[in-house]
Length: 158
Image 1 (cartoon, one colour):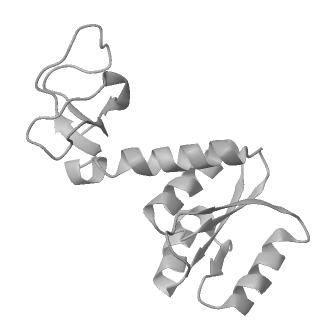
Image 2 (image 1 turned 90 degrees about the vertical axis):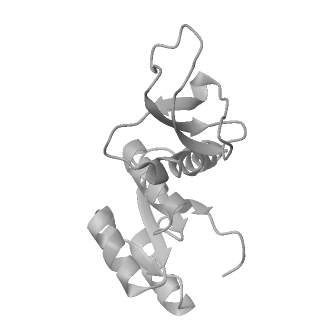
């Protein structure tokens, strides 16, 4: 599972970590007092992240990475991110920006629209609460273009 740890012992030949480092990654028995992991699944963290923040990153980013690998996006593709203000939605927005996709996101509450505008999606958010507003907004954003794929991180119908 996801973990954020202080490394207490490790094998040899691991250049990116040392005993005493704070690290995040995937570990076996991650909630136990002592956990083991493959060093390839761990990365050092800085003081800019709390342990609580750091342990949310591995699965979130792996989900985004694997989903987008499956979709095979190319630069310039339009992408719809469902639940754009959640962890996977925010990570997807950053990932899409990095690879040159044009992301749009649907969210429900006004403060989430505002937050995504501040995060770089100004004018590219859609209503998840009103089907008519969603359809109108999506057609305006796509300008008769094609939506290449959608990433939905929700586990139930909404």
